Length: 413
Image (tube, rainbow, N blue to C red; front, side):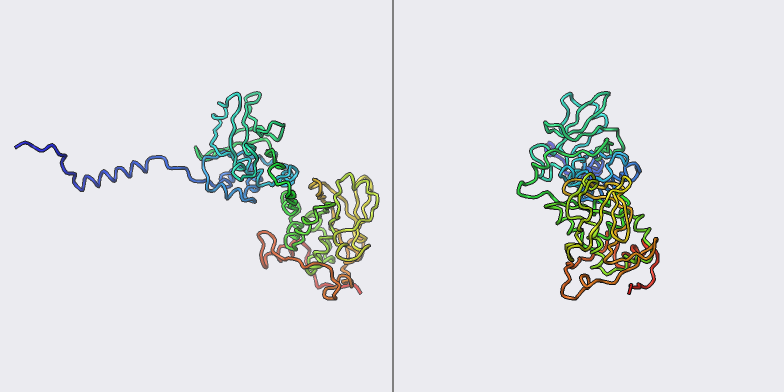
């Protein structure tokens, strides 16, 4: 009797071995790339520490965690503007969208750049995915320049922001390529992307101060007091001019000033005293016609109170409060309708402080216009919150550490 032509049955043992081999083979194949912690990758390169901090301060770092096959155009510390947020705001942009424009949704190695076609290469960026970029203006055009350089620019027909690729920084093969570029690149069409009926977003003054460095105390006080939102609301119309004491100015306050001992509502008045309710660029301040200027604090009291005397002295701009005289040391931010200037001293109003001697001031008692609970108080309630990364007793310790140790408050008779 002949043998049947059907296949012999497969033993269970053999079937198991085949299944195991199939699993091992699948495990050996490359798996889809997982997201990379971009800030952790950059942490190995101190020359890009400021750019990494900028990423971490915005939602962009989190958005990259779930993506792969990316190219990051990173800007070295020396090539970043002094205030990246101010730089972005000057173009009508948010710093987060500018950073998204530096994330290319394609892995590009140096060899890929060397093979760029003569017409260039259009690459989509993370900014395009937001829906705020008109047409293809959320992409960048990579073109070959002179001496084998590569230039990154907007595809807009009109000249715009651009930067040169300085070289490769590092790579996680086929997942993340980091290229250094010579400066921040701003996408074109921000004015087109925004609705004509929607006003431009206000300048985040706290972020401007944080970016500019040397204003940690002022930034923390603004954040804790809640008056930063008042400043932003006042940017529209005539604009605002903000005088910001440096950290050294706060550290140089005499112990008798006891600024940090003030109740929250009076501390908010001091902060408002540093703001003019008009936009003045530096040139306008140098030629100001009326030296006596009301402040935002004036608006919450009465005319003629809480004013600043602004004059030009020995080639610099002097600001006299009646208690202290400070000078403008540099421009921090200047983009109509907001200007921010660093000042050498904390501006203490004579309505709250009195000159004690040449080196110190003493606290004046609250005036009737300032006394809380008298039915005439015009100071709006402040929204107290802890400064960034400081909470509870840590906040108190932070402010206490800025000032010289303070004894019990003694009011003038």
